[in-house]
Length: 125
Image (cartoon, rainbow, N blue to C red):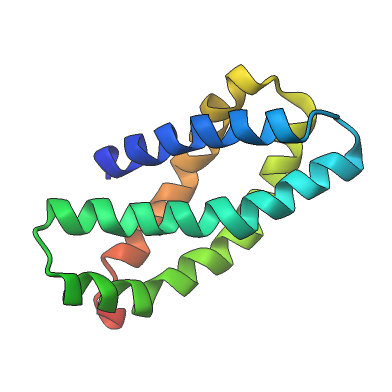
């Protein structure tokens, strides 16, 4: 989980820099656009990285990886739409870019408990 989280943290660092370079204003409209783009593009990417890094570390086959993503990724994506939009409004509206990944990681402390539960839920395996 730690290695997966570090991988996602690296992606988020560059993602937030990219978003801030493309959408520079801090108006509520710009913030809401950033949140939407973040949810539509970065959330699925991070979910994919999560499952991929753990599949590599667990020495899973490509078939096992695909099957797990098919069975479990939608649960994480739904949870992402509940947790992250309010958190990202705060992130994008109030925080400078250099603090975004730190803030993101603080929110992730709680969220990662759920991701671990989904990952290891044998009912959907």
